[in-house]
Image (cartoon, rainbow, N blue to C red; front, side):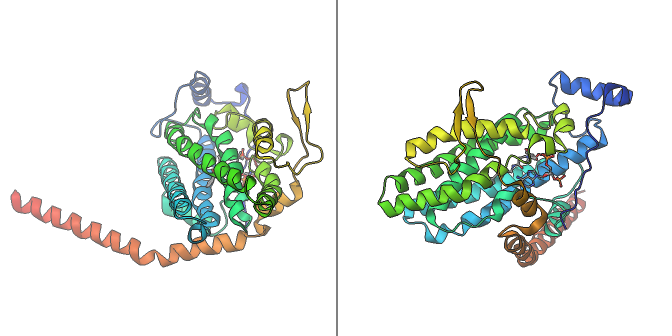
Length: 332
Ligand code: BYC
């Protein structure tokens, strides 16, 4: 069901590259941006489609666990803020689908691959949001992890992706702040509310660590993707940065990170922490997480229910084009 779209064969050495590939690599190494119409290795194009497409899918699937709470947000203000955030995710999806389309794949093709399970979306969205505190944890941890991953991607080598990321990152920081604000309110609330905040942290901590992908030794795409500057940091580097940034935030909230092995390591100037459960991670990305079927089912239903509207838009555009053509002929 979750077949890989691109097989990475590891990073090519300079001797293995054709002259065109070497010239391309030189441009990337010099920090030049690659634009859609320019020559690029087929593997670069496919890797970008895989990564940008998965990212776009994550944005729109990510709307589902949060959208679930719009009607149940505790105040009108919280509802308006959450609504704005969920709308932002749709916008992020659009920027990213547009960036992917410049590589010669249509949005419909990408969505078909999401719906038939041949393209992935982020593992994190296969976990349920059970309480209002989960919306806080999602904003704080999930958007926090997303920012950690996406800020470096502003410097990615492919122009349209890099420009989309600049805009997305601005909005993600608002998302992270809204989540932390919910957590602060809950953590400073009644003992029951504080317990809800701790419970949300307990359930989302490990899945948030998994968002950065498998450990570097298991990461099949990192070496080539980093050589092409499609990825800027390794999965483990970003995971470490995320932990180092988040632990003091949890301390400020008066909450405990659910990891008995969490400990400051003076030598590396960072925290030691437990590896997430990688068996669970690989199960989730194989389609067997707690909410995979529900999430994909909701996306497929939304796509099918919206068919009449897409058809109407196309029919309107065709009529409009015919009217304009007729008016042009009449004017000649
Ligand atoms: N979930 O070789 P690796 C967000 C797959 S959401 C699912 O390390 P790579 C947001 C990987 O695809 C955040 N699958 O891969 C939205 C590969 O399988 P395939 C979305 C994962 O690509 C709404 C295999 O495991 N952000 O922002 O070098 C609300 C081997 O991995 C995951 C992005 O997509 C995962 N967590 O590195 C709130 C950022 N991790 O494709 C927030 C852009 C790994 O061969 N993407 N896999 O079948 C990236 O930076 C990279 O693609 C990753 C993975 C770091 C995620």
